[in-house]
Amino acid sequence: MLRTWFESYDAKNLGERNNALREIMQEIALTGLSRAGFFNHAAFYGGMALRIFYQLPRYSEDLDFSLLVKDASFRMLPFLQEMEAEFAALDLRVRVSEKVKSKASAIDSAFLKSETSWSELNFVVEGSDLNLTNERINIKIKLEVDTLPPLGFQTESKLLLRPYSVYVNVMELPDLYAGKMHALLFRNWQKRVKGRDWFDFEWYVQRGEKMRLAHFEARAIESGDWGGGASGAAGGADGGADAAVRDATGGPAGTMTLEYVRDLLNRKIEELDFEMAKEDAVRFIPPEDAHRLDMWSADYFRELVKRVKVI
Image 1 (cartoon, rainbow, N blue to C red):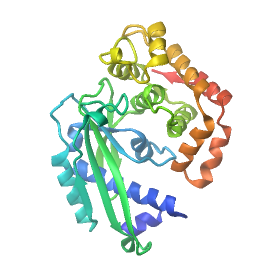
Image 2 (image 1 turned 45 degrees about the vertical axis):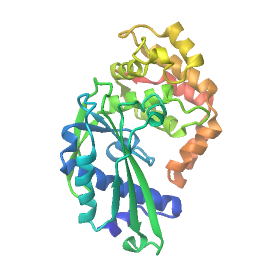
Image 3 (image 1 turned 135 degrees about the horizontal axis):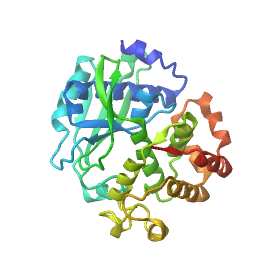
């Protein structure tokens, strides 16, 4: 089964091969978590949720989850142990280790809060098992569960077919859109440009999807980027200039508007290095789709901003 599954990706180079193997491992991990009852407590969100269940045409590196109810004491370890057994049943050797939280990881960015529980998986797959080469292939996948998440999102049960049929609790598209918009606008990447965020934004707009404005607002309040949230006094996502923007335009909770979101997007576009954005995004899409990035420019994204929709 694994060989057939891998061959369905028709990987043509080392990068595509590793992306295919990583995605296979991610789906096995989700299967194990589902069978362990993890999704009674949490919802799947982020780029990989879009990729698997909503056909986002790019790969993603990590698996991100949000608890359905805030619980600072929640730990993934019992579920990870059962997930490891899922790999063993497929004759795959997997090392599972829980990463200890530290102050450094808590302040990496606005959404990596001190309440976030981290785990890290290191997959070691013998290449010969998948009819590749005799080399050992190391694939590392990071799992993150937000134990004190901004709430107000909705979920739906989505069917995952491989390696076995299971249901996964997934955030609905309007809430996934809100999470992506929050990351795009407020995540502090310093000089790094996450072109994949702009790729996803383009995808949402092209599909005519609507963002749940209330959940975007809840996320912005939680991170301190709107309406004087709990961490607002500490500078929020970017501090400095963005703090001034919040002082000038950030109103109290309940007054978030589509016009304000569009204004924030246009501000980001003005400072975006499009070549760096393309360099980041192209690593996560098949080579034959690289031409999709040729359109990227300030004028193009400003046109997309005009087409943003909310509910």
